[in-house]
Length: 337
Image 1 (spheres, rainbow, N blue to C red):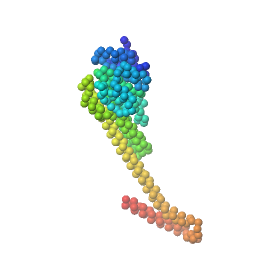
Image 2: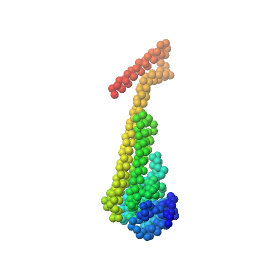
Image 3: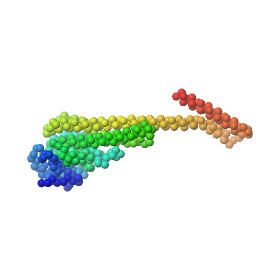
């Protein structure tokens, strides 16, 4: 029997794609009907399947309840308001909630979505609402013939792919921060602080969504299910440690952005202070002439020197004298500071 082609759109059951492992070197694509038949028989312990479904499809949850028999905790997670990344054990099955970036992800929008997983010895179920980068990379690796010995190995591979995506995001963010730092050194501060603020908010959001809950993960690694091989436990521990390293790099980048923002704010404040100081000096130097002009410009009788032929020059001399005195006072105070 020829394996059916894998289509990206979901079928009537909500299945986007499915793969059967354990029959030969590579994975065999299967549709929902063959998946139901395999789930009903399941004669070979070395075989396992990966079924990827679309939660936006109306028939998905019903099909899972009727044919797969996932745990109640998994169904509760599908409707849980919490989207925090976690991997926990429920009735001998791993229930995971992972957050991943969309295909159209950019640092300006930072669009993410949730992927739900149910991992048992023979069945891996992944459910999503919108297309995600990491799960697509995992599908491409499976189709390319990557050696996947177990369902946990698929989960580990997915965590590695998610870590690779996050590394690319961090690399792009570092490029933007380097550019902002170069502009800062060159004295080009236009809109740099607002851009860095937006980038920092995006990174904080990614870290909050992608960082796994340490307590649940620690309990899982300390007490794994009986069907999980020791090698799978070690691989899962290594994958989470590598993912933690990437998240630490993300935190370091946030601190670097914070320091750049503070430096930009300090330079802007210094520039504003210099401008205010120049404005103050101009105001002080113009104060004598403004006062004398205001006094002599009053429409009242008794204006001094009004009939004097040299009155203008006398008033100009008085203004110049007071201006020089004011300038001397300002310069003297500036030198003291």
